[in-house]
Amino acid sequence: MTEQEKTELAMKKSQGEEPTAPNSPEAEQAKETKEIKAPLAKNELQLGSRVITISPWTGKTKKRFKKEFEFATEMSDVDFTKILDILVYDHFKEDFLLTDKELQYVLGQLKIISISDEATFEATCPSCNAANKITTGISENVQFNGDTLPAKHNGFEFLNISKTEFDKLATDILESDDYDGLTTIQDLEVAAKIQFKGSTPKETINILDELSIKDIKDVMSIFGSHLAVYDLSVDRTCTGCQTEQNFEVEIITGIFETLAE
Image 1 (cartoon, rainbow, N blue to C red):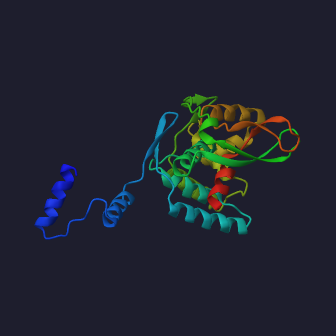
Image 2: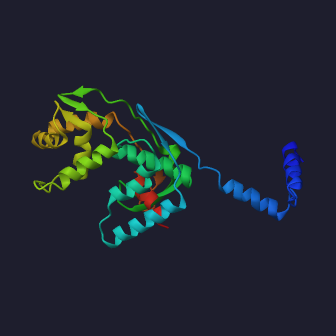
Image 3: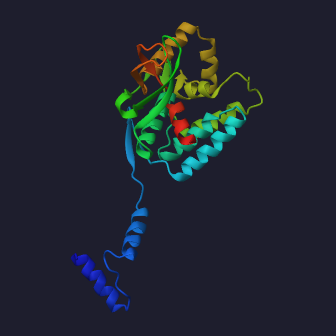
């Protein structure tokens, strides 16, 4: 018996309480209860010049996801915004807007700390188009090459906008009376992070719409190459053509299927 246990035993006796044997069922139950109340582990992720602290998914997270996912599947209209809020944005405290690739990276890290590193993905053979199921470890195949964006490129400035600011921006534009019906959430995410010579996000969308496809590709290549590069590709023998192939797999699909079980 340790000195701490001896002290606790003496205090219980002095207060008229019946001491509990160290290995009794009552003691084991008290130990389990104490362990259950322990706080969840926190994890830091480096995203280029930014750091976020993520917390694992819980049973409540899975229930919220399944409810939203089942409803979206029934309606044949999956609202990724709500689902990613549940799985990603609700699990880190910093107010950052993430790019699509950063979202996939953080989603993968949350899967690792919440469930396991292993994941099964649907993938199409690049040679014969046969459907394959690929099981692999996320951490073994993920390459995160996040970097700090240049300040400017061809008149465009690259910005860091908060998730709160972006949500307000999206509401203001998508629910405005003059909404053109063409602007998507993806357009807004780009416009929120790219500014042309002091223009507003709405003006930036119009500017990008008027650029040639070549100029748009130029801007987006700089924008994309300096942010999260999430590369999940594995070499496997195709079940269809029986040849060695390099499969590119989508992490979001695999994780959704795991949580929907």
